[in-house]
Image (cartoon, rainbow, N blue to C red; front, side, top):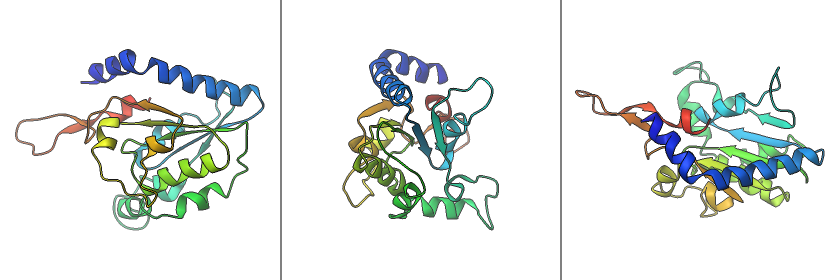
Length: 192
C-alpha cells in the first residue's frame, strides 16, 4: 500500500512538486523564509524542517504545541484538547500574529484532511499577507469531507499549489481480518 502511494505521487504530483520547489527556492534566494505549519500528526513533516546538520536552510517550522503535543492521550494536554483546538476559528490568526510574515516569504502547510478550521485560517491569513501558499493534503479525504471553516473554503481552495499526498480517505491503508477499522496511516509516507 505504501508503494501505491509513492507511485501515485511519482506519476501525478511532479508538476505540483516542481512548482512548490520553485516557490520555496524563490523565497529563500530572495532572503525570505518558507514558513512550515501543520497540526496533529501533520506536525511530523514540520519537525523535519527544524535546523540541524544536513537540513535545508531557509525553512521556518511553526509548531503550536497545543495542537501537536502527542504525549498524553488523556488528561492534561490530552488528545481531546488538541482535536478540539483544531476547530477553533481565530486560533490560526492568533498563531500568525506571533511572527513577521511578509514577501518574499512563503507558506507550506501540511494537513491530511485539509478541512479543519485552524489550517484553513492559517492559509487564508498567509494569503492576506501576500504570501504564496503551498498545501500538502489528501485530496481524496479533503474533497469528501464537509467544509468546516466559515469562509466556505478547504485548504486547497486557499493554496496556490496543491500537492496530493496520495493517501486514501480515512488515511488507514491495511485491513486486518477481525478488526473493524483499517490501520496503517498513509499520510506519514505521503507527507514525507
